[in-house]
Length: 623
Image (tube, rainbow, N blue to C red):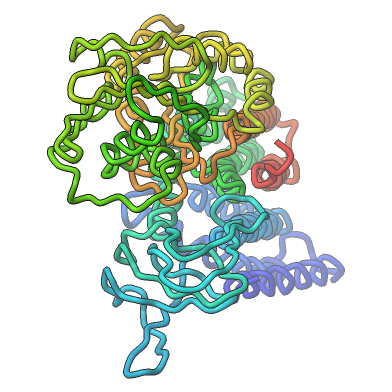
C-alpha cells in the first residue's frame, strides 16, 4: 500500500471500531446523543466523499458516484438509520480502497514488465567513466554498457562481446548473443561482457522510449465497450437520480390524494436505497481496468497493442493475410545453386554480388556472403534499383542486370526456365543472359503450428502474399496448410490484393495483415489491423502497425488474438454481470424488497467482484 491507501485503511479500521462500540452501547433509538455519536464515525470515514460531492455540485458536475453516496447517506442519517448511513460509507470506502489497490497492482506489474527505460548512460569524459542523463547523449557518441546494466540508447557495438536479455521487450527468456558490428537496442540488459556502443539515435527516438510511449498512450484509443460505458454513465446517472426523486415523492403524493397515509419516511428510504444500488462504479472502473490489464499482460509477452480499440477488433479477426519472407520464413537466404551460362560460376557470383553491393535486402546480403570477399565499390557505378524487378548497375565497365524474369523480359533477354523451389536470381551481362543463382529461404520452425493455432483462435481464412514465383509460393503454402496464396506480387500489388479481400469480407469480420513492418508499411496501414512481426528496433513497424510483435515467432500472432479474445470475454462478463445485478436490485429496491445492506452489495460487492475479474486479464501466459 502507498501512503494514501494506508491512510484510508486506518480510517476504515477506526470507523468500523467506533461503529461496533456504538452498536454495543445501550443508547436510545434515534436519540440526539446517538445521532451525535454516530456522526463521529460517519465523518471519519466519509468526509472526503462529502467534500468531492460538494465540489462536483459547485463545478456543475453533479451526477457522479460521490453525489449518489453523499445524498444516500445524508438521507439515511436524517431518517434515523444511523448504522446503515455509516455502513454505506464504510463499505463504499472499502470498495474504493480495493479498487485503488488493484489498479496500483496492475500498474506496478506493467511497470515492472516494461521496466526498460534506462536511468543513465556511461560516457568516457577526460579518461574516466561518467554517468550522464541519456537525454544528453548525442548521436555518434560512444557509450560503455557494463554487465547488469540496461542499454540506454540504440546503437552499434564497436567493441566487446556479450549476451543480452531481451525478455522485457520480447517476452522471451533465451538471451541473444552480441558482437562487434551488431545493432543493439535500448531496453535490453547486458548480461556478461563490457560493450562499447556507438549511438545511432537520440534517447527520445530510441526503441525503449518509443515502446513506453506506445504503451502509455494506448489508453487514449478507446474501444466500443469503453465508449459505450462512458456514454451510458453520462445518461444513466442523471436518470437514476431523477427516478429516485420520483420514487421518493410520487407514491406518497398519490397515497395522500386517495386519502391514505403517505408514509414519507418509507418511500424516502426506498429512494435512498435505490440511489446506493444505482451507483455505476462496477462498470466505470472495471471495463477500463480490464483493457489496461489486457494491454499490460500483452506487453509482458512482447505483444504491444496501441489501443484498446485494437484489442476489440483483434478479437473479431477472421481473415489473416501474411507476408512470406521474414514472417513465415526465416528471411535468411543462402545461395544453394549457381548455374552459369557462357561465364564461369565465380564470375557470375562476383558480378552479381558487386551489383548488389549497396542493397540491404536479405537476398543481396546472402549473395555478398556467398561471394565472401571484400568488394571494391569504386568498380561499381550507376546503380539503379528497379522496384519489383531487381537491380541494374555498371560493374567494371559492364552493364549488369540482376533480378527476376520480369527484369529479363523488360530488357528482351530470355531467362532459363527454373522449376526448383527457391528464389531464382537471373543475371544478364551487357544484355546477354549469363545464368541464374538459386537462393533458398527456410520456413520458421513454428510456422506450421502457428497456422494451426490461428485456426484454433478463430481465424477462418489464411492468406499468403509474396513476390516470389508461383512455384515457390505454392510449395510453401501447401507445406503450411494455407487456404490461399497470391504470388509474383509487386509491393503495390499487395495493397491491391488486401483491398480486394477487404471488399469481399463480411462487415463484422476483421482482416489482419502480418508483415515485417519495414517493406510492408502501406499494407499494414490499409488492413483492419496491421501486425508488425519481428519488429525489434524497427521504427517503421512501430509507426505503421496497430499491433507490434517484438520478436519473429509467428506463434505470437495466435497469442495476440488469444489475449484479445480473453480480454473482450472478461469485458462482456463484467458488463452483463454488473448491469444484470443492478437492474434486479433496483427493481427490488423500488418495490421495497431491498434494504441498505443489499444496496451495499449491489454497489460495493459487485464492484469488487468485477475488479477481481478484470485483473484476470493480466494473466496471459497460457493464452
